[in-house]
Amino acid sequence: MDTMKRIFTAVAGIVVFTMGTVVVKPARAALLDFNFTGQNGTKGSFTLDTDVPRSPVPSIGIPTPGNPGILYPNAVSNFFFSSPQLNVNGENADWEVIPSIVFGPPGSPILSGISYPSGCSATASFTCLINVGVGYSGTLPKLSDDPNSYPIGLGIDRFDPITFQSLGREQFTSYQVVRRQTVPESNSSLSLLAFGVAGLLMKGKIDKKTQTVSAVISQ
Image 1 (cartoon, one colour):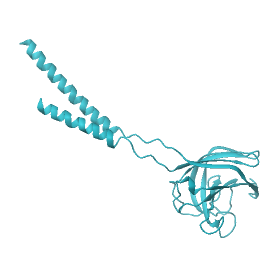
Image 2: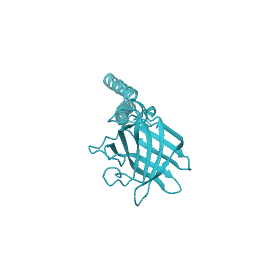
Image 3: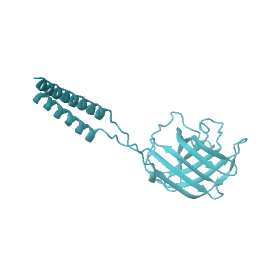
Image 4: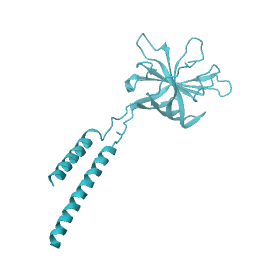
């Protein structure tokens, strides 16, 4: 009986330790949610995954020689875009950063933003339909997950689907970026195992007591 008690006490300690130390994993804080409206009634939103690694092949950036960009393929998800000319709902897009284009003195935000559809800015043919410009002041090559690294919305460029010539820029009337609040992942397998072992030991202890009582009664 003393041995069973010691074992049960040890397992109970494992349960407490497990619940207190490994039930919850750290939550990821890499997703940023953007939303914006344009002066002509355009509305849009998207999610940027800042953990997406850069492509080893640069984008062509803007269709001007000498301004290549850093490309993050399919880093954008849930892209929603509503305008009189074009509507997009729940699609992926690329994110690119063009370090050579600075909006102000050194240290000011540089050009970054969505290139839609995915792959449109990865070849010399440049087949983009939408660019959503965002000023970026974070680190490179890994994208920052701090909303303050995306301080300004620069506007929307749309392109003709036949000639891919710019149809002009629409300025933002509202722009917001926030870090998505992720739910911590549960890692309860070890605690379940400990609870299971404790249950089996308890059952064994009860069964042993039952057998002892039955033996006394039979005598």
